[in-house]
Amino acid sequence: MENERAEQYQGKITGFVTVTCLIAAIGGCMFGYDVGVAGGVTSTDDFLREFFSNVYAQRRNAHENNYCKFNDQGLAAFNSSLYIAGLVATLVASPITRKYGRRVSIICAGIFFLAGAALNAGSVNLPMLLLGRILLGFGVGFESQAVPVYLSEVSPAHMRGALSVLFQLATTIGIFSANMISYVTQKLSPWGWRLALGTAAFPALLMSLGGYFLPETPNSLIQRGFTEQGRQVLEKLRGTRNVNAEFQDMIDASLLANSMEHPFRDILQRRYRPQLVMAVLMPMFQILTGVNCILFYAPVLFLTMGFGENSLLYSGVLLGFVLVLSTFVSIGLVDKLGRRPLLLSGGLQMITCQIIVSVILGLKLGDNQELSKGYSIMLVIFFSLFVLGYGWSWGPLGYTVPSEVFPLAIRSAGQSITVAVNLLFTFIVAQAFLYLLCALKFGIFLLFACCVSVMTIFVYFMLPETKGVPIEDMSLIWTKHWFWKRMLPEN
Image (cartoon, rainbow, N blue to C red):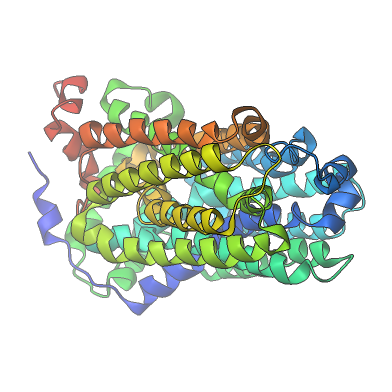
């Protein structure tokens, strides 16, 4: 039977909840900046000459294969080390987030980001550079564990999708900012790359200080025994004292949560099977779109395709702007149309663009040729359309859907699995991309198109709509789904 209390929920979008969500979303800006700046600096001569001299030599070789001139596992490790460190960190962050609150994990993330940015900016050798990226990875692990959950818990049910998408919006703004700063600093030889990497310290400082002033979520306070304080925060977030229905649902959820001593073991129970599947497949599919490769290897890709030194401008200004714009589209539509329509339409658009890009490269870009201006412009257009489709669908919703479907009892464990899977596949794809680009050439985009096809079919048949469902009633949607209701225990 559906929870009748959900219809009694009161509240509105208050200035307090808006400011709270904006401060928390800075974590996404840090994540995006670290993704974007890596692609920017790895396409600059000063950085390559300092740390990857063999890649620099290959790049200057006019006869080097277009698809293989950046194929270097050390260069790939610079990008991918952040993600494997984040994977480890999110497993550590899960019990901290559960026992000490979401706010503590957000502050820890800011401190790791600060240390990593400082170490990267002052690097004098490759081990020092990689250590800085690993510290940034710890920051990614903590903020990816805490921020999406924080946003979903403080948001009112009817606006949860839009406010949760703020994390992705901040991520896209971070990527855009990183590419713009990289474009400017590449002209500041020979230390411009240090400024680009060190600038990450500014949002990290904002995140650390902002996290100190953030309120803890009412869900976390109630779960940890601070019931009255949790109610006070809930009243402030909703802008009304009439929060009895939502408050009682949180108490009921916390009683169940506190009865579970081993959430990672409990999440394997049959009654949580649908949520576990979403925690694994949604972040995996998000990465297998190939968008991360396009974003943090965009300058490399555009250099490969003959755009010359303007590659940072094209990738930074155009793709970054398109990604930010498309995220605003998602914010405006996610709570009106729902999650499924956006995921399905975005998937179809990405499939079409990947196929067209692959055909153009296959027919017009040989191993040692350059694209004509007309075909280069066509590639930019279809890359932009691909990013546009991703930005209103799998970009934000790959985080939003997993963060909202878990009950409180296993929410931190579920988010930890989601982030770990996301970072694991980001690491695999980032480490393998330059090699696969060399081996498969244009075929790598066909590979990504096949992956997007599979995930679009999965959404159509397997993902129920979560629009407008209160977060503490989310378990009920699986009992109505044609497939998942067969998987659940009878009670």
